[in-house]
Image (cartoon, rainbow over the protein chains, first blue to last red):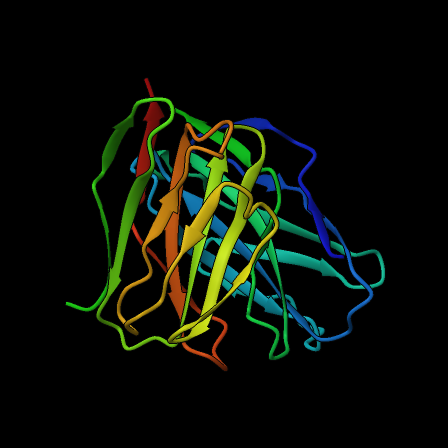
Length: 116
Length: 112
């Protein structure tokens, strides 16, 4: 079975600075997706970024980028130039790339506070 | 606009009662999912359905039931057998062969 672990329950960062959220996962699969989701106080789940395991290049979306280390099973999220609107719960998630239901497996979450 | 509608937003249940959470999507997505969110535990899968009239148990299905009579609808019933039902419930949908999930806005269930 796959597991996803986020070891940082809470983090804080000053506005305009950079912060990195950690995520590790365990799987015997070779083909899968990894995701970071953001859940602001409204509790709406928003996809931040995704990574396909077969791609070596790290994904980037504007101020958000990942450091994907497949051998180490590590998938960290870097937020550059942090903004007050980045304050949210962040979830790392795993999905097998097969026909077995497309289930997302989530980590425990990291609550990020961006301080002015 | 296409999306997922969950209702109600807040729900209160007395102990021993069954209650049904609604989830409707107009995205023509094949698969639908129910997740439960508790503080410090992330989201855990309750049930999922890939096609109409078929569904599978997730990791924490005990005390819950679902139906999928229409492609658009995937209601979740929290039965009296669920020992600790107070939680935030999220419904989601996805097209098969596509990684992208669409989430609803959630239902907060409280047992009083």
